[in-house]
Length: 302
Image (cartoon, rainbow, N blue to C red; front, top):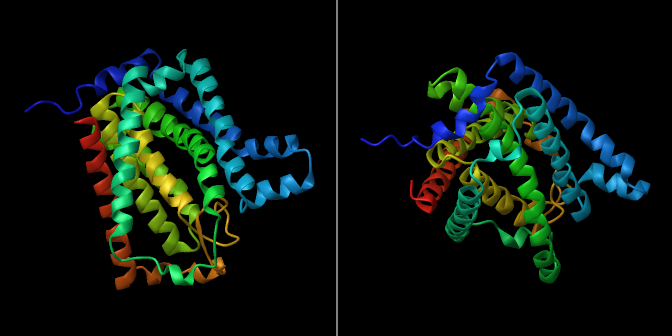
């Protein structure tokens, strides 16, 4: 049986030049510092208190997009740290340029079509409960800049977790739990803080971990980050552009806005986890990642 990860070897070989674990630790610490101070740097550049407030709140189109564009500072910081500690550059994290671009376009297109079809299937959102609908011309005009902002956001995350960490850890061990499992677990743990309360946090973490494993597998199959970025981009674009809750962060480009709800009402504690509704939601999330992964594999033919 052919090795499905044969292209992975070339992708990770560039990390063998400087594989020491201490270098990885320094890069991760440096990246976290850049990530932490980036919002303050952006706030310092904004010329008015109104723009600063919009950026911090993230509920307007400007605030939402500016927050995602800020990931570009972290991405630049990561590239500089990798150059400094490992003497390799941007494309070493991405893989072959032509293959990455081809896989990015193919996976983004195919996964987007699949997600659109899934939106047409039950269960449906109750559009009668929608609080407001963004003017269609405004929403359509926001799509290109939203995709650029999301490409920067997901590209930065993929360069860190499925690029840098996957490459470096694969040089330290050929075991999948190391280069696929550890970065995915870290990716999931960071998403815990997206939830309101323990249950939502754990659901976010589980979903992100599964998405990370799917992206790691696609990267290993294709030998570049294009497929992983494409899957991540299509997923985030649908989540950001279609539905949101009024006055919640990250809803500035959503087409449909539901009435505001207090985030505390979603703050269920861990003892609520075994309920039937939550278990079904977890299963649904896992199936959605599985379907996107299959669609991405079809797109790259691997």
